[in-house]
Structure formats: structure tokens, C-alpha cells
Image 1: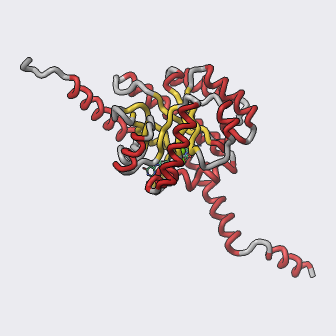
Image 2 (image 1 turned 120 degrees about the horizontal axis):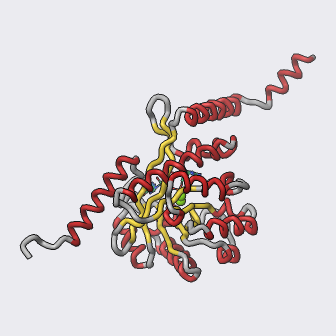
Image 3 (image 1 turned 180 degrees about the horizontal axis):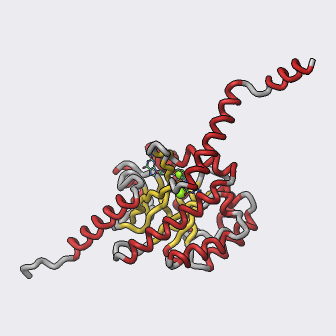
Length: 290
Ligand code: C2E
Ligand code: MG
Ligand code: MG
Ligand code: MG
């Protein structure tokens, strides 16, 4: 009898559920090991001013280097890290590394803008978030006005009044705030007005949709709303010249995407900065003959 009960209980765990649970546990262990061994690195993707084509900032994007040297993209480990809470430690690592890298590029005269770091929901609701950020900025000697934080609609809509309080505290420090993946979650216009944001990032899905008239209208509408609220607009995932041209007509402010560059390793991004500097020098240099 007992045996049949046991067998019955097993019916709830079919094979595929079991495999999923095992995979999750493996990933959780891999992440724990990766945190201990410093296998989380930060890549950087340029954000360019749409009119001047000049670099205005970059987004820090985490990458997980596996023991075998492969790279796991955040889409594959962030959901699990969110569930286990490991995202908090990963987030601290990313913030510290991004601040250090940008501080060194500023000190080398290669960069003057802001680095944008993504905040997960769990990080955003940490009671000591502001203290953590203050400590990191102090330890890395990065002035707060070089930092921007990207937060999604889902994160701020969990508890809008509380989110507004946290956002105000961050803004009071001179940190910029961007709403990430705009349009993919649900945030009411009433709240959008109340959130102390600087920037709205239009999700790639809308940019991809601009090959239809209705898609272009949608982006136009988002752009109008954002500008009416005095927010600057970043288009995410711009890959094509045609998209860039439409976005320029629609008065988009900043673009980020493979059109300019994929996310680059720290060394790769430094090379990118050196090239930018070289271009600027060429533009402003006085010919030797004159
Ligand atoms: P996100 O914050 O919306 O970041 C933009 C994503 O779009 C990045 O993917 C970037 O590589 C990708 N992307 C940019 N331009 C293009 C393009 O032209 N074409 C295509 N196909 N993709 C483009 P990535 O690096 O895989 O990151 C995925 C998501 O993972 C991020 O979306 C963000 O939500 C999350 N994430 C990344 N790093 C962190 C982090 O440090 N902390 C947290 N909490 N989340 C992070
Ligand atoms: Mg982002
Ligand atoms: Mg985004
Ligand atoms: Mg996105």
C-alpha cells in the first residue's frame, strides 16, 4: 500500500518537470561557483547621439564565463538568479566593475558621459539599495553624475508609491534614471508622469516593428509622450540604417544597437573609445600647413 502511495506521489513529477528542476539546480550551483571564482564580467554597449553620432554613454551588460570558457547570456541565468536571490550579489559585482571601468576611462581622458547599469526588481526593493550605491561610488571614486540606472516597468509597477520614493532618493544624488524595455510591461500614463525619470528606452520589439506604418505610428506616439514629459528617448536594438533614418525623423535622441556596435568586452570598449577620440581629433585638428 505504502509503495503505491509513493508511486502516486511520483506521478506529480513527470520526467520533463524533473529535468527542469535538475537543470535549475545545476545552474544555481554554477552561479554560486561563478560568484566565488569571479566569473561574471561586464560588457559595454555604446549609446550614440542620433544627430551628432557622438558617444553619449554605454550600457553595462553582464556576461557569465563558464568554467569551460563559454559565455552564457543573461537571458539564460538572470531568471534563475532572480528566483534564488543570487541576482543581488551579481548586481553588486556588475555595479562595482562598471564603476571601476568608467572611472578609469574618465581618468584616461577617454570618456565623460554616463554608464547605465541595470537594476533587477529584487535589487531595486533592497532596503539598503541607496547605501550600497553610495558605498560603491565612494569606494570606486566615481562621481554619482556618471551613473545611470535602468529599471523596468514591471519593477516600478510592483509598488508605484514606494518606487517613487526610492527613485527620488537616487535622483537626489545626481544619478539618472531610465525606464527600460518601455512598452513591454504595463505602466499607466498616470504613473509615468509621476516617476522621476530622465530617460525612456523603447524596447527593440517596437523598433523591429517600424517596417509597418502602424509600427512607425506607435514609436511616434511613444516619442511624443516621452518628450511631453521632458524625457529623453533611447531606441534599443537599432540594427539598420533605415531604422536610424526613421528614428531621426521621429526626433529620437539616442540610439543603441548593433548598427553602431554590439556589446564589447572591457578591452574592446577601450579600443572603441580610442577610435572615437581619434575621430574627434581628426575633426577638430588644424591642418599643419595653415
Ligand atoms: P536590456 O537591459 O534591455 O539590454 C539590451 C539587450 O539588447 C542586451 O542583451 C543587448 O545585447 C541587446 N541588444 C542591443 N542592441 C541589439 C541589437 O541591435 N540587436 C539585438 N538582437 N540585440 C541587441 P543582453 O546583454 O543579452 O541582456 C539581456 C537582458 O538581460 C537585458 O536587457 C537586461 O534586462 C538583462 N541584464 C543584462 N545585464 C544585466 C545586469 O547586470 N543586471 C540585471 N539585473 N539585468 C541584466
Ligand atoms: Mg537595460
Ligand atoms: Mg532594455
Ligand atoms: Mg530590451
